[in-house]
Length: 129
Image (cartoon, rainbow, N blue to C red; front, side, top):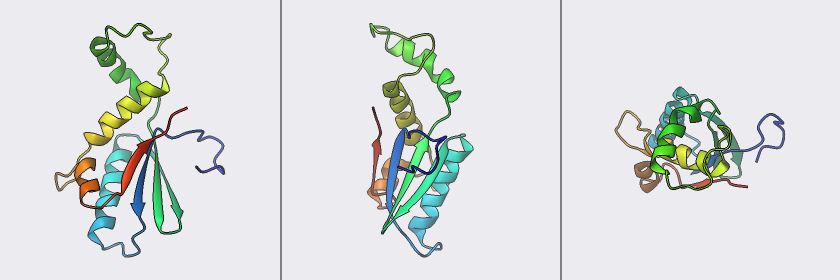
């Protein structure tokens, strides 16, 4: 998305929202609160404005996946391709970031699913190879 940042090659997920000009607006405040919660979890969020839309590129640090790999190995014990020398596939990254996004709650108790239903975010999608 943002070709000007050569260190950022890809995003795991993208959140999309309608641009809100008034920062006092409830939707703008909830967007900001959710993004802050993600940043507290050491997730990189890149805000990109285009016309009347705001795109939030979400990228989790590689170190984060160590915590989840064991759980994935246990739950995917039938997975024949297994783990390749500790590397994390893009599909695994997406699964983990999806889980984190849906388990992140703002101070109102709302998670991403509820924020989308209330129009705070319009949609979300993962990026894959």
